[in-house]
Amino acid sequence: MEKIKSEAGANSPVPDKMSYCNGRYVRMANFAAKTENPMMIIGLLAGFFLCILPTIHSGFRQLLHEWPFFYAIFEASVWFKPIFIYPLLSFILLIALLAQLSKGFPGGWREAELAKIPTAKQVVDEALFPSSKKESIIFLYWFFMGFLKPYFWFSVFAVLSYFMMIGGVKWAA
Image (cartoon, rainbow, N blue to C red; front, side):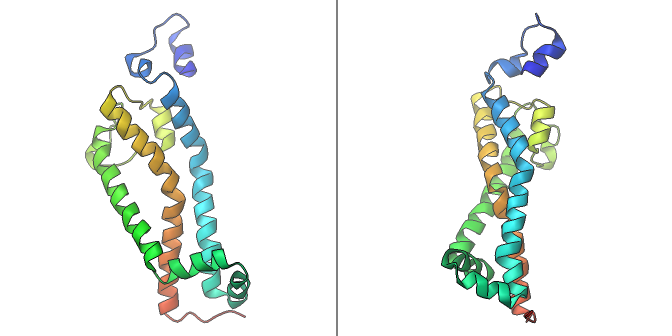
């Protein structure tokens, strides 16, 4: 918001789009933009170390046996147990709902016709902040869905690991 004020001039009024959000949505979008990539990296690393590596390396799998919590995650995700499948299906439904809601995304998101969800960086760069209650609800839903991005990448590795397991991957020593 400060950036917008400084670009428009010190005495210029804040645009209507920004007056509703009171800076809260700006802070939320900036936080999402800062944490988007680290959260994806966490999901990738968790998927690699808890799904792929135990699948292809028996020594790492034996090491995982010593930590029951992590081994339970490995077993549940690789063999598609209900404790993994139900959150995965819920996640897919939530993403589909967010894609449909993106048509009403704040700020007149230009890609809404394609049902494309904006990234956090795009929200900050294009000042896509809510100006009504409906847009506010969609924005908050988008913000909290951002915390599920690590689960998406973990799920990708789990599915890959499942196909490696049923395909008979030779265990490394």
